[in-house]
Length: 126
Image (cartoon, rainbow, N blue to C red; front, side, top):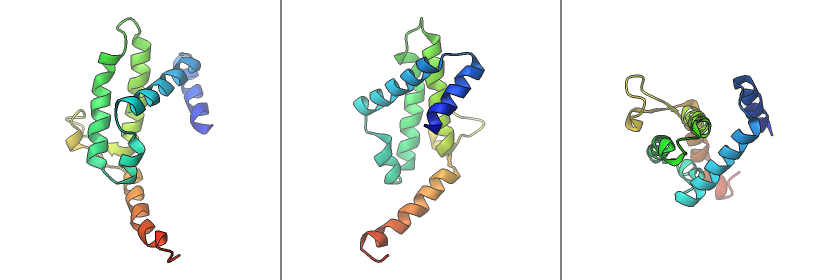
């Protein structure tokens, strides 16, 4: 609910329709599930170079996947994907499109720390 609310507020401040944006975000999620592996398993396994590559390729594909007549949909998808990338990675200022130059953010580091604690908890040593 908080994410939906944040999207609605952002859309209103940008002068675009929140309903369209939410629909586009949902379509991205569906497309993501259909075309390649879900991102969640990649994150849970700590495969962050794979995540960076996947997000980078998706970001580059947006102009190819959105109709030329509908620039709004493409821009919304770009902003959505940029926010996901920025949540997980710090992009290199001189070459932001090169996913191999991206560095981890605190979200990634926290995920890795949590994953290191999980194995002993699974064995019942709580």
